[in-house]
Length: 98
Length: 415
Image (tube, rainbow over the protein chains, first blue to last red):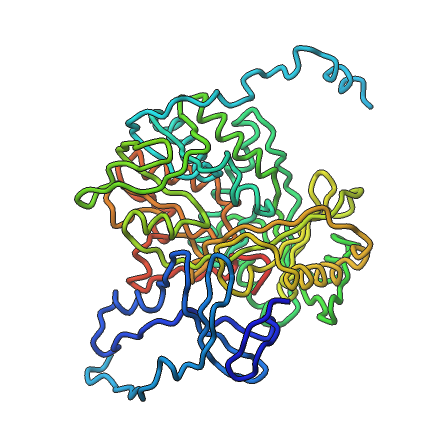
């Protein structure tokens, strides 16, 4: 079985993990255009190479980030999301009714 | 052995049809009216209909490997139109109609066999969605109905009606469901196209797309530059990578899809059977092999490697459905790279480049659409960019306008 190193639980079988999509930067939803929002929702990086992805260790419900090669399936590193997402996000509500 | 067969074996004139083979490779010209990237089913079908219906024969099909060697050879050859959305049902029904007459049209046997396709429901929610699919299908002229477990037992006596303790509650019985030899479909189209003057260039890889002022001017290949009036892209799993070379992005994610086949045995299974809960479909080929297919891999990868966990879960499901399959031996396994869209519908038609047309997003449902894709893409090219009504809902632009076509009937193995 392929092994993935969970930052919280250590090396575990890949079957314990759930893929959660690429790590993307969310545009400000109160300001972004429809096409910029569509770009964020539907488009991913498609080149063959290293990609940053969200993964969930399902038994412990722990989300983290993995760097993986999407051609060779080699997992180069895994780390806690705090390394990237260190600021608190306040979701402002739109002033104009949507 | 029948005597007739023996006669063929010792006859020096056999094969009788000397035209059966493709013409020998020609030199690559510097200019074509139409360049089609991708020599799979969709690409050669587009070339065939361009030559046959529109008289456009200065066409080159560029294939990096060999004819029909990609996903055309890797699918599990299921032909059906029991989809959910009206857009999908209309489109795939037109494809089934074309398939029915393809052997006659080619004068070449594609081994089309209309055996019906049966999808099993194990939950009330699935039964409800099947009822909806049956009604949508009937409305558009398809032959699809909801049948009871006792009817299923008559149709497929060898099927376990309580697989993995998930009792079968009902079945979606699609009489138009069929199978065909997938290689023969590509060969038939390629033969028909090349006989009409289309050039098929195998081992010719497109390495870059040349553009100028919002138009495509040609392609860079490993055999030199080819100028083109119009370029059509039909490259399945690598669609997003090629589009990037042309300078635009596609909302696709590439997942491997694994399938496998057993040693051949005597015929026991006529319909194509799939289970919605077990994510598994089983069919017996005309040669007697049992083909198993399932869902895509659980995470994206540009690699057609095989993985043991997926094999194990797929075989476990197949054995639950047909317990005696546990005695059988696997003959081979393979994988293909599927380009999945988020709404399970394809991406067809115009692109940000004026004379560059796309046929992509074929995920796990591309083979059954081969004839209608070729026909509509040929219409699009011949009309100079007027998108045929049948494929208008599948435009690339739908994602930026939030007008997706949610096709939950796309994979026989899930929902």
